Length: 105
Image (cartoon, rainbow, N blue to C red; front, side, top):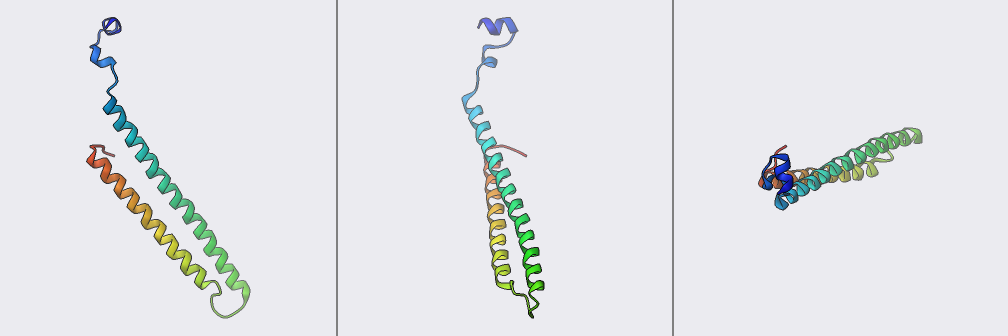
């Protein structure tokens, strides 16, 4: 009460709302999860592009007819699509939870 009087504010203004702090912590954790999901996708995409370039070089350098690295390319593409879909689902779920809890942005 002495601090409230010294700063000319209500005592309530000097207390921490535990529920509000918990909601902010949950929101920050969700934001970090969303950022990590996006980063993991971009890292995977960069390695995928590098791998596809490498596979193309290996196939051209082989001199045989056809694309030697076709099956690895197909399966890596399927895996990349799966990773992308997983990231999209995580982002949509996190966004839904944020809207349900009243967070915007």
